Length: 589
Ligand code: ADP
Ligand code: MG
Image (cartoon, rainbow, N blue to C red; front, side, top):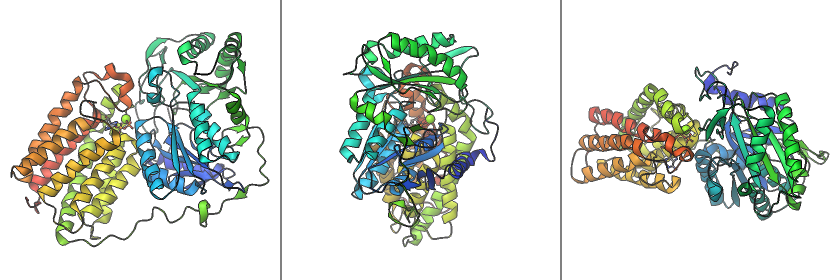
């Protein structure tokens, strides 16, 4: 239960504000998150981390000398948008390259990936190491598909320590890759969590039971058992993490050295953690391991979820040096950082500044026809917002079955932001492309998550086909939607049959293009395309997921359609009413 908030919608923002006010010694607020408030005399490779909010101290609490240089902080449980990540990178980078690191979640991968692309185009050497420590989210043979949980910390720490030692980007990247390869975690949960203002928990664990392997956003666990004693839990953790298959290559149990990190997920007391830790320490030692600098506390939480995870970082000589190197952040400290040489970062330019980046440029010139099309698009965006608003709870419900339950909230935030952006542009003379570009950015900025990134891309791609001066025809619209289909598949790498929004988008785009080419009116072609999307969305109920968060819980989603496909079909159907009723119909071909 979260008890204190002002407006649930601004909770994440309000939290960042207070966090920065309380921790100015380490961080300053920048657009999209936080960046260090000090810098070393010599420039360093910048380590930029991030993810959704609700996991404190991940991610803002880990920014400071010896650890991260900046953290992109998204909305509650939603990845930061590409814009936010890009802004934090620009405020943190110091001319020596940038290492991005975050937990392996589809939305974060998409948004950080887009930001990396933008930075690379500007000649900044930007690399990414995705954290994949959670042993229950995919088999060891598919380690790259595992999600990231409290093991984030070891990877961020190794990278931050390498950067602080003056290493170049190649070595910082290598240190992070090595730490990730040698980090394993597993978690259990006793209760779900309730986001601010929500009436129901995002997910639940049956009373008196323990969910083994439950994800930090409530992605369903692998097993439900009775709650063991503290010693019993210690035994479960150690048993699983010392399983031969989970001992990293090059590491050994007998004579090996590990950093144990026992993490509380939000509402388990430190006292309880210490009781569990006492037995963990015995078991690891009895197995022949030497324990180095153990950590017990909160490192990656999940709002008020009651749960515990154990992470093991299997040391080699290099990782031990990196782990023990001094660090000083709001939530994590190691050794003692010599702060005498640190300089305060000022806001005026250079890598310290928040800069001009992100300010809106003037609208390009537009034709009257394009402005009319923009008017119809604004109506469509308002209709989308209302349609999603009415179905948000249902979309959340079906996302919770195999995903993390936020699809309704995310789509709501995205459509509200897009409709608002369209309204704000009203009367300013925006053509179709400018309108869709601004609305697409607003959508992905506010919604975060996988679907936010993909819908932002859809709007912008359609916009670039419509242009600001050429007439918007049925043919250009159909071509724009086909291009959006290709862009979504290139970007998210999902194919038809993977149980994602692609399953609805492909028949929608293909039917629309075929019907328009056959000479049907836009309204008629759209009606048939929307109906094809609806049929395909329903049919996703019979599919096993191949992409996205739901992938690790395949069988659980059988019988339930994919939320992203359902919302896309719903939007397509509702937009038909706008097209059919449009007083300024988009001319056919
Ligand atoms: P998140 O998965 O980040 O929580 P949402 O819950 O808003 O984001 O959206 C989930 C939807 O996103 C899924 O139902 C699916 O349709 C879509 N999705 C997930 N991954 C992909 C992908 N790689 N390509 C296309 N669509 C995807
Ligand atoms: Mg989701």
